[in-house]
Length: 193
Image (tube, rainbow, N blue to C red):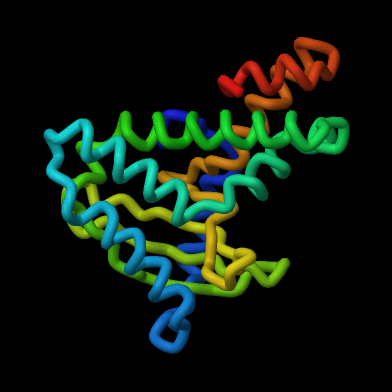
């Protein structure tokens, strides 16, 4: 997932989010559960086990992200022109791409855990959650979370080193749509859907 991230204006925003994070996580069971789910998936994986890393990334993307919400947000107006089958194909393609990107950074993630460093409320009621890797480069990751259909918190964005996953995917989609005069099929194909 990290390879999709490109420099942008989100860097200052992410730093402000981390700096302004309020340590209210002790009373927020949903956030604690989200962090525990991440750690349960990545902690047991050995850095050299490519098959286990891929499996962990598949689980992590499925458990941590609301891929349907992310796909809709990144496709923007093109989403409204898609039929149900096209939306499913685009969502599946975005999901596969996220899993592949995650797996490409598996050595850094595998066997590591994250520690919660702060939580604040976002403008739309989302929770902005900052975590830091406990080992290695000790990156700070900022998650934008909202309650999913089952009530568990799911990510609709993730910012690493100031680079937003959703903003990057939105730029990629816009490039394809601009280049193809808004062709929805070209957009779906661009993510392998």
